[in-house]
Image (cartoon, rainbow, N blue to C red):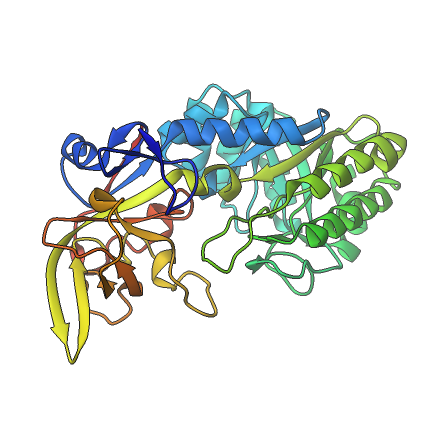
Amino acid sequence: MITLRSGPAGFAVIDGELAVGGIPLSRLAARVGGTPFFAYDRSLITERVASLRQVLPAGLELSYAIKANPMPAVVQHLADQVNSLDVASAGELAVALDTGMRPDRISFAGPGKGPDEIERAVAAGVTLEVESVTEVNRIAAAGLALSLQPRVAVRVNPDFAVRGSGMRMGGGPQQFGVDAEQVPALLDRIADLDLDLIGFHVFAGSQNLRSEILCEAQRRTVELIIKLAASLAGPIGYLNLGGGFGIPYTDKDEPLDLEPIAANLASLIDGPIATHLPHARTVIELGRYLVGESGVYVTRILDRKESRGRQFVVVDGGLHHQLAASGNFGQVIRRNYPIAVGNLITEPPDEVATIVGRLCTPLDLLGDQVALPRTDLGDLIVIFQAGAYGLTASPTAFLGHPAPTEVLV
């Protein structure tokens, strides 16, 4: 076994093939039963959590945002390593509850929670992160019907934006959370109802690779929550600072530097949080950062063709499985994800080819003008950074092709 040098760190090479979970790719494809498939390396997930624990302050709790990768086996694996889970639907709630995670360590966020979802969440005893007055009223009604006191936190849309985020989810007009200036009135409404208000959640943006911007957002988040909590009669027990930690997807991306973030979080926990919010569990909520780099999408070459001097490689997968790699999942400028020929991982580049899927649309582009070793029919194309927002973030029903398999190895 040798370390892979030409692709993302952490994976290994066995007998000239990429290995996931210690299994060479051709053998893994046979074990799965064919291509396309997603494979997640459990050891890389474990190592990522451990590396975070080593650098982040001991008093900080870690929550996994299931939306990043809701595969039940992945969620179960992480449930034993994180402090809590965050869900965004009743389906994800069922996955979280099946792990055995304590209900009071499961949070339910997202706009537009339906009455049936709210009733299920209240019955389960999880924390509902409220995003409107309507939700507050529905939660109170569900609690009354079930003779339970629902546990709630207020998700705040801050009065500041996080620059440099792949997706901005706070600041300005948003469907997410309650505008900071409207929170005091909402707190008054909550006080009139039989609800257990435990704290606040602020999530301002995702996929950020600049530590100084994340540090500024964390500082401003703590200032905002201290201000909002000052009007409450009692202490708060929950302070969710969000996450937003990004991972590199292209050659131009620099990995996130965790050291200044860890130092900033330590100063916040030991300083203003200890002074003003001494009873609060301080939480950061991460999804992509925990699982994104652990996964690969594997698809087999069906055809090779030349069109007016350009070489095309046609594979049995496509954007219906891995929308983000096609550039159609929020990217302003499309850039190639890291790509390799998994069964020829040690071979040097010998040609430049464009990798496309089998869908009848020019949008089905997985790799544009990629340097590859000379490929043949049946070779295995691997797209890295596929552990988050892959299968469940893609239009799997488009054109009626079968859904891919997922495995945790």
